[in-house]
Image (tube, rainbow, N blue to C red; front, side, top):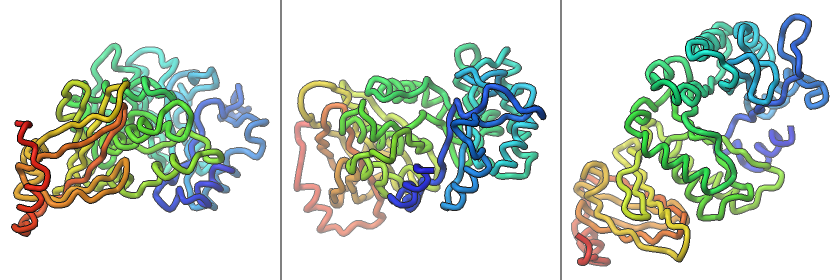
Length: 372
């Protein structure tokens, strides 16, 4: 309830955050006498229905957690054998999102059937409930996931291990996504998204540059933005980053295309994401963990299969600060200075007919003859 209050009073709702989500451990250890899940009486003494009503009164939505198996990952009652009953219980409570974990699932066939059945059960309730799956995460070690099928049943899905509040975890998540981008990227789009797990910005394990990297790359990956932090104690810098409207606009771009890593050059990675109206988001990540800032140089002809700046474009730096980089053309070179483990996020907007005089002035302003 405090988090819901802060979502409204501190501007989170205004920039688009709308769900308050409960994870594992909300349940009592046993179902009630009618076989229904029930909340822990000490943690949720008023019940989930009253909590949902309170969250809804703030103009927000409530998310809850369950598991496809007979027990959750923390050992509480799972939904196996009770998919229809649990889905209806959640609908009766006014729940708006279900995170459906995959612990203790039995066989792979039972895992798949469980995710399908809960999807159908949620739809049968008649209530609009976002369905978050961990189906491919549990399937992948033994069998290649069918992402077309997964998207048919789920709204977003986890592929990789739980994230935690440390740079190594964020770095590993990014590397896994880049390595597997050809198999997971194309399926993402309106109605179904790859989920690299939660934002840990505003906690204690990431430096400022690393927090910038997570926010920028989650926007590039079209990832659901689900914060795991304490809004009662978040510092102003992290709040500014998580509420940055320009970054959120990239993340929420209506075209719905997931971004991808274009290249990895020594310690640098270049990522891009196609946006609506022919624009692109571009991220330059410096993976080096020691030393000072370094410069990465590349040609605009490298972006968007040569089309992002053809014949010309404007470039806006979004992170770490907002700066106008002006007008460029299809053979301009960009010199991007990036801090260790940091990222520079850019937005590239194509211009069909550039003002010729301004274009020439900009091209000659900062040549890089040593870079081919």
